[in-house]
Length: 411
Image (cartoon, rainbow, N blue to C red; front, side):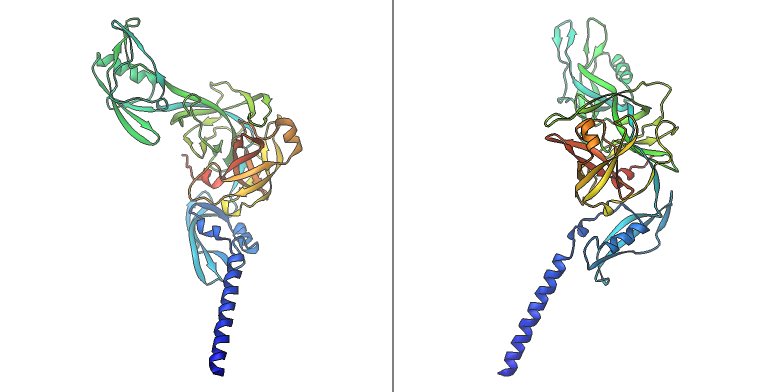
């Protein structure tokens, strides 16, 4: 009987110890480690900091699986392993390893002039025919924001291509391909003869160019590839993401500021002139920013202002800075990162921050339209870019991790 009692005490004690160990493990583990995805940037210094600061808890350590594969530009592809008690691998992700990849820090507004890949449909328009004003026949409704890409299997590179095909059609049905929210559609359209001009028309308003204002985030020191905005340039009438065929960037002159107020976001008022004074090209317009290469750094960057890349694994709530030229000169302003999200895919709302700098609050009221792309620095590293302002509170904004921007490759 004494033996049975002893066994019960031992079993109960073991159970209590097991529960205590389990609770201790839960309390001291950051389970966001399981949400980590491939593609983050990390330096050897940041790897040491992850372990020293117990970023994912006291019992989880990180180490590189191997030396990695050299992919050029000072980077290696490798695997980062997270181990429980240094023994059991609980997560493994692909990472870009660097010895402290440096970039020039942006912070100045740029003007973007884009030629679209295809044409953007703005809306329908009637055609004045001999039978009266009509809307030409269509096999399916064409919506504002659709991107017309081909007409009779010919790629649409400008509005002129459409005019040429309509002239050749002599009023017969034509086939048009279009993109709508990443899906391809095909329409049959019957042109109508406009009695005033004597030309066939589709009854569609279209546009083959776009422009916008945004802030430069970084320029790669070696390749001179740049990233800006942190989100896409969209058509101002339809909201469609502008597909880029070609484009240029220009210096932008700040001519005024409309301060932000609750319920009414402010804006930077800038002016740029298109022409021969472009500073570089535009190759990509994506949900994580606008990308291309600079032809000259003069007037765009301060070569004394450089920072190493801070991967999204190193971002944490707390003090940080944004770089902006809203005062007329490039300056750093104090912010506080409120929340840093772990994301399985690219998002322009990676983190939430609040402006703390009284100078910036006095000048702008907070974050303005046109400040998208302003670099975010933490612990001296470039970790992301400003993307959006809170409509109900202009002192708060969203940012995107710089990792998501660096995934876009330009040539």
